Picture 1 (cartoon, helix red, strand yellow):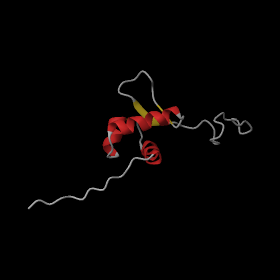
Picture 2 (cartoon, helix red, strand yellow):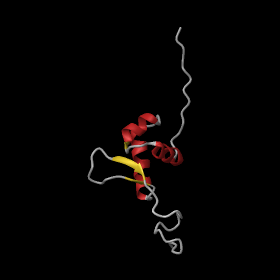
Picture 3 (cartoon, helix red, strand yellow):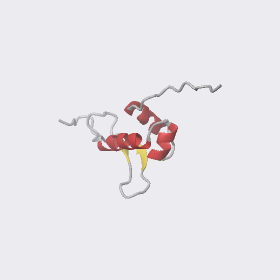
Picture 4 (cartoon, rainbow, N blue to C red):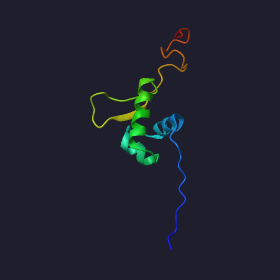
Length: 90
């Protein structure tokens, strides 16, 4: 008699991915992140690229395989990113 394991699918969220990146000491590839987060590599890659486009994560454009890391803010205020608390983006 076969036993079926009940597997619960946990969908990947941007918050979960950013929390994962923040917990890493070294940059990680999308493949490593997909294994650790139990998600498809294409899904993780797409979300990582969106985070890079939004300025939340960073990577070296010429490096292969691409290694991603959480972007360190230049200013404690997320709204401006200039380092000057009197300046805000419009």
